[in-house]
Every structure is written in structure tokens, then in C-alpha cells.
Length: 87
Image 1 (cartoon, rainbow, N blue to C red):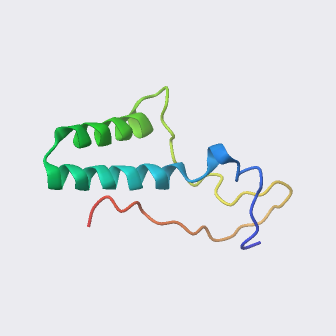
Image 2 (tube, rainbow, N blue to C red):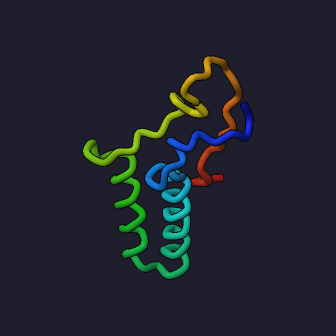
């Protein structure tokens, strides 16, 4: 059902890691652009490598279990959007 949260999936450790990462990378990219200080670009690169490339820490974001609720067996629409990394 639309609008009902799965409390197991809403634990603090599962709250919006992709949104937090993309927001941080976007902010760091803007800081680098305006200050030309390479520490911001390095930190953004480190976050992207940590999140997507390092096999030990990769988050492997996907929609395989999106909106899954134990005990229910039906199909629905998944609301998603691409991260704002480019225009």
C-alpha cells in the first residue's frame, strides 16, 4: 500500500545513504568549483570510490527490494529519481 513505511527498512542505518552521498558529492563539487581547492575534489572522489567501486564498502544501490513489505505479494510502482550529478 502506498505511504505505509516498512519499519525494518527505516532503521537509522538504512536511511537514505544514496541521497546523503549525492548531496555531499554535489556540495563538494561546488566547493571545488568556486574555491579551486583540490581537497574538495579529492574528498568527493573518495566518497564516490567508497560508495561505488571499493568491493569491501560498495553500496550496490538497486531497486531489487524497493518497497518490499514482508507478508505482501503484489506489484506496485516504485517512485525513484536519478541523482542530480549532471544536467
